[in-house]
Amino acid sequence: MKSILVLLALVPAFAMAASYDTNVSMGQALTADYTSPSQKAGDPHQLPADHPCVKLNLTDAQKASIKDLMYNTAEKGIQAEADLKKAFLTWGHTFMSATSTKDQGTAAQAAVMTAAMAAGQIEADMTLAITYDILQPEQRENAMMCAMAMRRAHQNHGEHGHGGSHP
Image 1 (cartoon, rainbow, N blue to C red):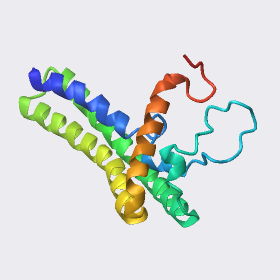
Image 2: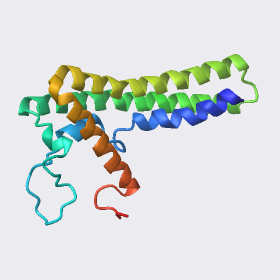
Image 3: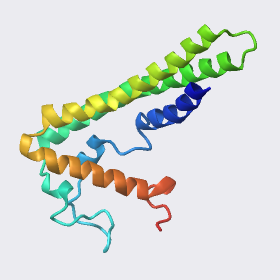
């Protein structure tokens, strides 16, 4: 019973890590244009010059490489999310069945964990590629600070997203 509770607690976290429309990925945070003039005074997306996203100063080639990587990652993520949903469907069906065996339950549980880990690995691989294959060593600190700041800002928007109600 304890393993089922752990599974139920962990899998939504893995699923959220692989959800590309609700999380700000490192690539999204780094490729946004934070320096363009705002059309409206007081635009909350206009960042100060000392913000890590502004100080990062990516080249056009770096931005293009990150955007290509984001596209390829999103393609893989779509399949990974489908695999995870299917594993969950099988898991639920197995655990609700009066005729399933413990071995079948163990296999269904392992399939969910494998799919969840695969989904999480996709975004982790993208972060590794950006950090070590695209960025220069001196850009890494600002890149990580930028990604963390954008993730926090996105989380503060809650489910409202852009244009939603701000606290």
